[in-house]
Length: 79
Image (cartoon, rainbow, N blue to C red; front, side):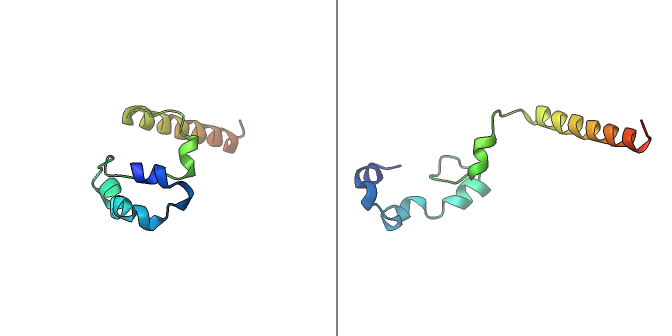
């Protein structure tokens, strides 16, 4: 963040950093400017353990779907 935010500690308020974070969401999420400032990612970020290429991700999704479909068809067919 800024030197100000690290120096103020427990006395820091949102008003102190408002100018630094206001309007960041559209810059990051819409324009893709990851260096625009602070942005949120949520708790799910802790579940990410790799960052595959788009091809790898699609291949995984297709393989998973194929596996699920085959298993369910076998159960339906009594096998």
